[in-house]
Length: 222
Image (cartoon, rainbow, N blue to C red; front, top):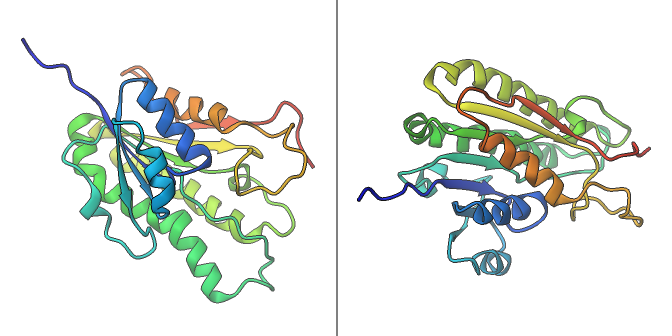
């Protein structure tokens, strides 16, 4: 009797917020997950589920090819940094670090997994932001990275669509994660809500790819 294929995903930023919610939801759907993060204590908590393999990894300096398993059916780049500085306030070092995590790491993890994703006709999901479409004061550095991530996703999709690999950008509005310090959390989108959009893109039927998904709060926040 033929064994049933168990799909496998790599999720960066898997220890909190949207990345953690995506990991949990994929497990509910019967997937196994390589959960990538830097905090080993938080990774241990994620790995309480036997379907999760925790990997402590520095997205700025690590080599993604070293953590990619033979089988990959989906990649979710949920890791990100959110500085609150104008271009006059940000240091060169901080600028480089934010681009390294938000953009360059996304490119490198995608590049490292493409051979496996071609074999599985899999899906890459980039967690973008409303800042990838418009910007607000004190948000310029973050917005610049998310605009770049938008361009990366669109260019990559054109490069690999004939290989059967799908590329999706998710644009959450203000979400209740540690990245935001809002005192009133009530109007914020829940991480689990964004995770459902991510998993919908991954589980989309074979005849389609969901290229851009916007997940906004019911009432826009100023």
